[in-house]
Amino acid sequence: MKNLLVWSCVFAGLVTMAYAQTPSVNFKKRTTTITINGTPDETAWEFSTLLTKNIIGTSNNTITFAGLWDEQYLYVAFRVTDANKYNESTSAWDDDAVEIYIDADNNGGTSYGTNDRQFAKEWNSSAVWEKNGKTSGVTHAWANITNGYAVELRIPWSNIGISNPVAGFRLGFDVANDDDDNGGARESQKMWAGDGNNWQWPQNFGDLVLVNSDTQAPTAPSNLAASALTQSSVQLNWTASTDNTGVAGYDIFRNGTKINTSLVTTTSYSVTGLSATTAYQFYVQARDAAGNTSPNSNTINVITPDTQAPSAPGNLQVSAITQNSFNITWTASTDN
Image 1 (cartoon, rainbow, N blue to C red):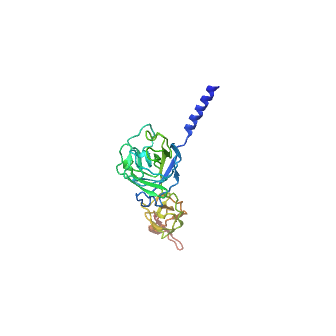
Image 2: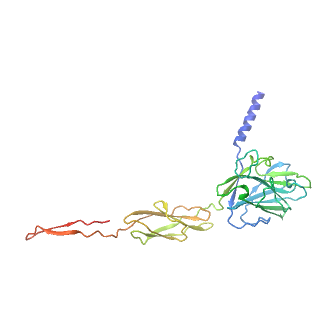
């Protein structure tokens, strides 16, 4: 019975491990200028994620972090509430510092790969540390704030071997805060996702997901109407869409296929290259700068007119003439 209980506990632990969810955080795409000066006060920063896992000791700090991204850089910022700050040790993690862990290909593993990183940035320090000295291109700064300090880092994607970041991209990521309250070695370390082995391997990092800064689609264009209809062209007009950040332009669809090569920035469009006596269906969509697409406008159906006259009848002839009648014959006309 005792052995059965032991194996039941082991099995329950394995099931719990198998179904444990990896923590995930979203970083929005940067749309405004971010200055790396240690004071992350731009409105784009959203400090909503707390560090809650005590890895060493019991931290009395309150730490939030935030992040952004663009085509060239990953941006990370911290706000730390800390009444006692020290910087006198030879190792960054033994002082008051923040750490960033990156698993660029998000493959986990039990060792650091070529493009995996462990950065540390101390309070009151002009330097940034990386596990293997790979700090090329990294911009960093710190500043004192009320009841603590703040840190900002801007890490080039090229530093971690990523060349084309796009919304939806996912990489391994974690952050930590080291707290030294009385000099000497740190008393505590608090972390977001991982564990005390983060410095050795990335297998327990969380996930960082790149997302668009704006996820709200424009409203649908309305009152789509046709005018100036000819055999080969038609003029489309509609009422403008609205959007929380502004409409970038419109796409025009003919029979379900987009026909404009670049965004239409007005509320009218001249469609050419049509065929006579042909039915067409049109609708319009709006797009914003983040790529969000509106619902379709109302759909309109048009039939191009036929303005080409038939050919003249030919070979008109009269025959069988009598006092009161005669026959008329001719060759048939043709028409498009």
